Amino acid sequence: MIIEKVIGNIDDFTEQQLGTYHIERIYIENESLAKRMHLVETDHGREVRVRLAQGEHLHVGDILVQEEGNLVVVDVLSEDVLTIMPRSIHEMGEIAHALGNRHLPAQFVDETMIVQFDYLVENLLKEAGIPFKRENRYLKEAFRHIGHSHDE
Image (cartoon, rainbow, N blue to C red; front, side):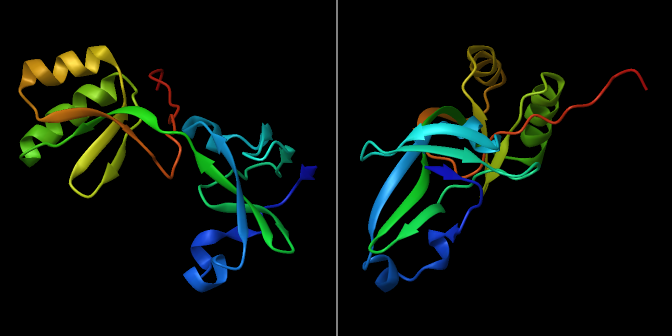
């Protein structure tokens, strides 16, 4: 099966609407959400090829197939992350500056900063006394590296 277009997202369905479907899932790594091409297998063993248009990518909950009584939906595997909980704007500035120098992408959820696990960052946080926890977490968006040059 080849998929070239996302049909929609389960977030747009009500609980009642979802209850009328059997949900078949494809599980991919968080960082793979940013890719437009995939060869995956559903949790029911069906092979699915995804080939999206340039500039498009997958999101958690995207519906790839909608058949009578069945949906094929994108989901992610949990990520090994550091969830950083700075106590002040000063601590947030310090850690953001240090992580920015490492070009490490981050996500922000409520009052926390989430980065992929890195033992050097873990050591930095311990030394700075900034509260954090290492955990496996499901993230709806891919970590994105923002490219730039130091030449200008």
